[in-house]
Image (cartoon, rainbow, N blue to C red):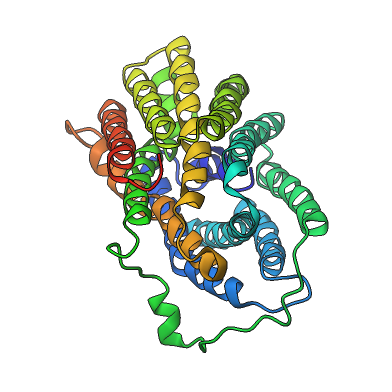
Length: 389
C-alpha cells in the first residue's frame, strides 16, 4: 500500500500541482526511485545474509525500512518543488523496498516447497488488496495532499510492525561465515553466472520482460483514465477506487486460487503463463477502451492476470532459488531486479511510445506494446525453465 498508492495516485496528484500538464515527468520520477533501489537492494540482501543480531538476520532491515518509509511521506506531501519531491520518493522506495525485501528473505528462509504456492497466493492477495484499500482511503480525503501520502504510510507501519513483533526468527549472533566480506565481494554479489543456474536465469528474464510490460501501464494509469474519460487528473480517484474495489474479487481468485492450485497440481509454469496471457488480453481491451464500462472490464481481466502471475510466480522464484541456506538474501535481491529494472526503463521508454504518431498521449500504442511484452515474458518462463513443472 505505502509503495503502490503514491505510485498510481498520490505522486500524480502532487506532480499536477507542481508541474501541471507534465505527465511525462512522472516517468522520470519513478525511474529515479527504481534506480536507487537497484543500487541498494543487493547490498542490503548480502548484509542481511551476514547480519548477526539478537533479532536475527532479517528483522533489523524491516525496522530500518519502516523508519525511512514513514519519514519520506511528509517530505513528498509538502515538497515545494520537483527536486524535493524526487528526494522524498527516493527515500520512500528505498525504505519500503528494504522492508519488503527483508520479509521476502524471511519467507525464503522458512517456507517448505509444499506451502510455497499457498503462502505466495496469500502474499499476492495482500499485494492486490492493499492498494485497493489504500485508494479507497485516500479517495475519501480528496484535496488533502498530506493525508494521501501519510495514510498509506501509517497503515503500513502498523501492520509491518506486527510482523516484526510476532514473526519468529532465531538469534543470529553466533552465526559465522567462512569468507570475509569485502567491497569487491559486495559488487560481485550483484552478478551471477546464468550457465550455473539456468532455471533461475530464465525465470529472471521472463519476469523482467513481463514486469516491463506491466510497468508501462501502471506508471500512467491516472493520466490514461483522465484522457479516456475526459476528466481532470484530480477526479480520477473515484474511478481508481471503483476499479480497485471490484478487483478485490478477481485478485482473490487469481492469488488464492492460483497459489492453492499450483500446490495441488505441483505445477507452476502453466499458471504463470496463464496469468501473463490474461494480463495481455486485458491490456489489449484497455488499449481500445473509451468508456467506463470497458475500462473497468480491462482492469478486472488484468487484475486476475497479475494476481495469478505474481502469486504462482513467487512460488516459482522460491523453487529455483540457488544456495538457499547461505545466500537467500542475495538471490532474492537479484530476483527483485527483474521488477525494479523495468521500473527504471519503462517510465523512460513510455514517453517515446506515447509520442508515436506525433502526439504525446498515444496510450493505445503503449498498451499494445505492454501486452506483447507481458505475453513474451510468460512464454519464456513456460518454455525455458526446465527444473520445475
